Image (cartoon, rainbow, N blue to C red):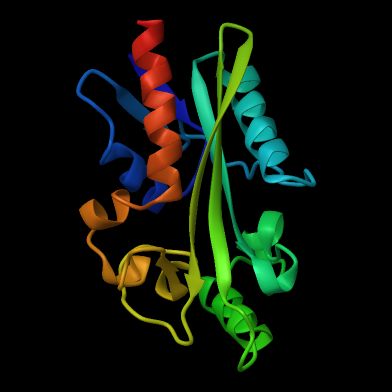
Length: 192
């Protein structure tokens, strides 16, 4: 089975490939020579995920999925949330986003947060969504050099390391994306 991942993010694609069973071939937008940026203007993580999957399904007519992920910090009323990728500016910058978030969480503020990933799968004129959530907290400083996004400042509940300090295998034991992928893969198995 071949499925298109509606993303230009090779780091996400790597994470996803690490949990795919044999028999599923993952194509990215780069594999399809599609370099256009897909709009992410929806007001929710669910909406962005659905829009991206529908956009690529209409473009190529192949089974495809998209994900959208947000870091939701309790003390910031769920921010950055749907704006996580461009929290500090319209330009995507992991460092600037983390710096802004850390500066907004002053001393003594609660640091509880969650990562939320929503995967939308489009196939045969149908659509289904899967959600993965991991609770945790924001560290006081950046730690580690693995992963991407907010990984250097997020510590999952029951973990002692940030996502950026973990190997990919360790991260997949906690990860929001791995949790959503597990549901998605179970769905694909049931479809087969």
